[in-house]
Image 1 (cartoon, rainbow, N blue to C red):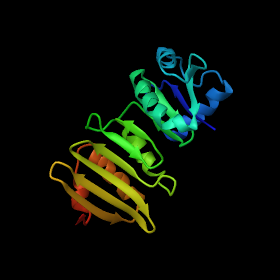
Image 2: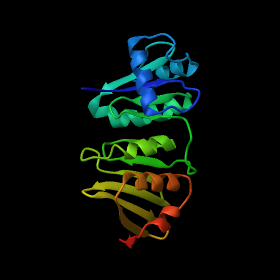
Image 3: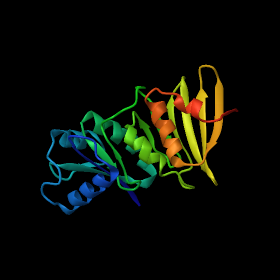
Length: 202
């Protein structure tokens, strides 16, 4: 089996649903699906496993066992080349913006995705993919703090750690929306989620 990623240029952020429509149109060779962009050729020329399919988009195809290794590099290079990156396996799109306030913040998922500086919509969408095959999502600012969540039978476990003070807290929330809100606040520098929930120290 192989793993694919597609990259192309969008003038503004798009949803994962829009990305899926564009991706299918590009694969069918439909004219006018997106506009040609010089970043496509630059991307394809710098990443092993990438092919410029047309002036409009490039496709990365690698063996499944190399997917995590290559995906991280592809996400970073796509941003550098001003391209969105669509992951058809996870049905997630990586936009150029908006980003959180912590430069270098990483998102880790239980199915192997490690991404530096994820856009806020991607974080929101990735949280919705948590399942037995993808058992956690975390946002990490190394050496400072992190927030992470895992699905439970009746909702979600939510954890926050202040690494500087070596304090870790845990709570349970019944709905995904509460997790998504907490992650969005964390990524943008807010801590209202710490006041909104009842926490126990771990």
